Image (cartoon, rainbow, N blue to C red; front, side):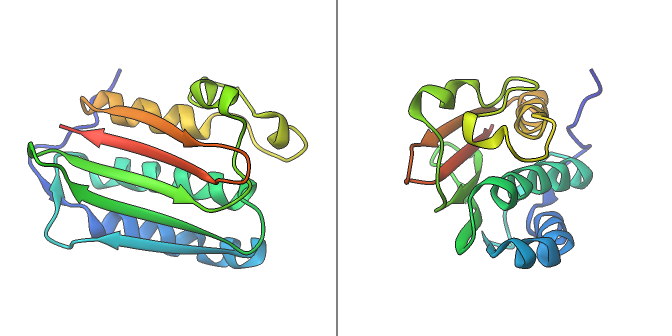
Length: 154
């Protein structure tokens, strides 16, 4: 139950870039390109450590499951009402539409992921970080359409 919000807004881009940089070698071995699309002026009242956890878990999910020659983009945008949306999007193999609602459950692993290593906790941790900051998460995609995880912060 520890709060993940910080004392005030912090720049988002440095924490997210640091997380992606830490995974660059692993992504290269898996044949996955990691990209960050973020205006450096965007700030969010979430601890940088928690932003790194969020980015790392989203990127690791793509590295493990998107498949070779795929691209993972971490995009940050302001919404019209003043919130911030962090979206992790890959153009990989995707998951079944019926599995999308369960991706944030602890220990859940989609059928295609069962043969690979992993605990089934990555996206559950993403959901925890986002909801502790007062936000919401949503998964979109389908087989052959990649996976998009949208994290909306107030």
